[in-house]
Length: 196
Ligand code: HEM
Image 1: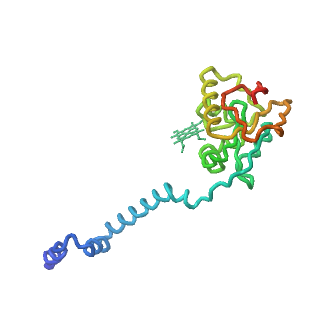
Image 2: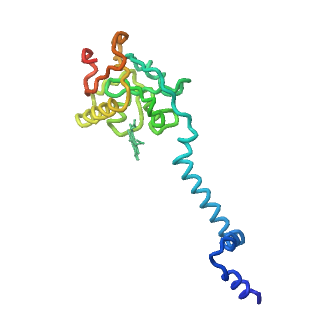
Image 3: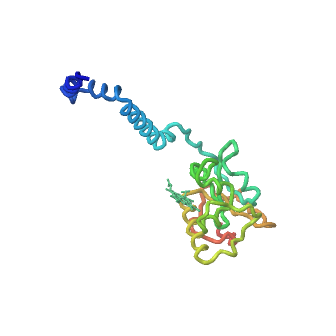
């Protein structure tokens, strides 16, 4: 007990020395626990920011597909197949969103849209999709339909167009004689087949 003042002065003699800082940390349990917590938090932040991108294998470039699909066909492309392809339909058009796998793939925040018609969810700000055979969106109000169209335009800009989402009984178009890089950048009605 009487040695306390000396011990203190011994500690404060070289306040900037790195070995005394290390000693302070190691010999005080509170400091040690705090240091471990800080190191863990910093590690977590770095892992969530940079870790995934450096460890995650880049998605290999898949061959482009050009095809009209039914809701049932579209459902297969939710990213769980071996090739990991993800398709999403918006406003009657199907887009290849494989590039955005981190959003729409099985573990993504918008996985509910993968392999689905996302129109209603996007229009109503709800990350859910319907299991309806075909959603004609006829009950959406004009603001919601505007929002669907804006999302469609955004998808057209960012992703490759695959084809139309077929209504029950509708026949798929034949795209085999189409120019490989042909794209249509205008927001449009899928019923107007001549545009494609
Ligand atoms: C708290 C609410 C939300 C937050 C904080 C949020 C955050 C974000 C962020 C930061 C991005 C951009 C990610 C990037 O480009 O790296 C994004 C993209 C997106 N969000 Fe959200 N979001 C929210 C709600 C929603 C809702 C309700 C929907 C739809 C119903 C939605 C649909 C989307 C879509 C479709 C994308 C675009 C992905 C792409 O580029 O393909 N988000 N969100």
